[in-house]
Amino acid sequence: MTRSPQTLSRIGFSLGLALATCTPAIALPMASLPQAPPAVGLPQLQNQVSCPALQQRVRAQLGPEIGVWSVTVADGNGRLLADVNGLRPRVPASNQKLVSSAFALDRLGPDYRLTTRLWRLPDGTLRLTGEGDPDLDLPQLQRFAHLAMGSGGGPGLPGTTVRLELAEEPPQAWWPQGWHPEDRAYAYGAPITRLAVTSNAIDMAVANPPGRLQRLLTRTLTTQGGRNVQLAMVSSLAPLPEDSVLLHEELSAPMHNLLSLANSESHNFTAEVLLRQASGTWSLPQSRQAALQWLRAQGLPTAGVVVMGGSGLDRGDRLTSRLIASLLLRMAQHPYGANYIASMAVAGRRGTLRNLYKGTSLDGKLHAKTGTLTGVRSISGVLETSDGPRYVSLISNGAGAPNTTIGRVLRDVQIVSLCQPPA
Image: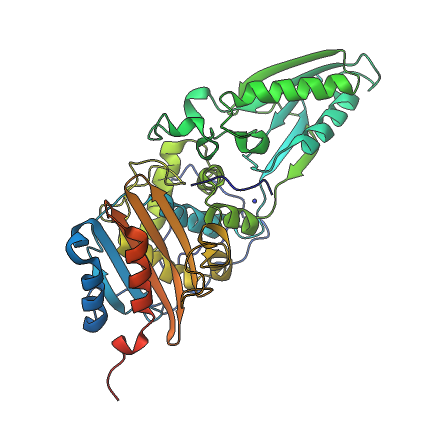
């Protein structure tokens, strides 16, 4: 759940399953986007375990703590190789990001970019709008300030008056309600806002992002010659007046970079923004509903699943290991599936798994998303084996030594002879 260093075309991935259940009010851009793929015979995750030998090994590894674990293993054909408590909802921690990132990739595409824009209103006032670019920083603010000096109600000479509105979410929406108050002080629990300089974190979370932004902009504008800087906050829902002119826009890194930031580095801010942008609304209740409806539209097992946010920092989230394994299997068939898998951490190599399983059989073979909260440990992803990929999900809520157990289970999954019929 740590914050990474600063560095983010919807297709209808219905696969023959209607997306008509999505919130009618959501409208996403459709221009220049690829056609939805035709319905094909995609593998569906089976309901019955078909590899008793692996099932027995997994249960033995879980031992007396079996009641606090959920484990699901599937192959590329949809065979359910092992499943222990796979339909029991549990707190997933950052494995929740696998849902929000898949949702965003499907709805927006790998080349989508978050945009921060500077507008000139008909009366000469300027307005800055944003979509939560996690990499917005001082160089971008300086470019906006330079343009504001030339367009903000004066000729761009020293002494120019600059009237600038900052469009932002209300303070009560900065943190999801389910985030623990103590988490909100740390960088990984920074508030979620549209205009977020360095993701609203320095060494710790920035408690008042608009205040910080106002100070930075005032200082920058004054340095460039603005003698009378008038900044005001307006609602992000305030419509732009007719005849407003777009003066400049700053684009984030493309979606596939943002996915990596969310999944490999487990950046909470980015994951929350992805959920909101994919939903077409920054209303968190509506975003939650849209994500859950999307999961259902993919034909995935959603009984007991609760989506409270995009990052997994909300302890009200509930996922099942069966749902996650099914999602991984489904995304492997997605036209953008390679981007999804590539966004995850790699055992012994990068992201939150860079220091785990080095020198073992898992080194470089496991692409996965980790998750950690107090009492929670999860890991889900794709494990390469000599018999093709295995889609794995392990969630523990209360295990004593979860990392050790996870390693043992994953190494058992690599023994493909357990699930092959005798010659």
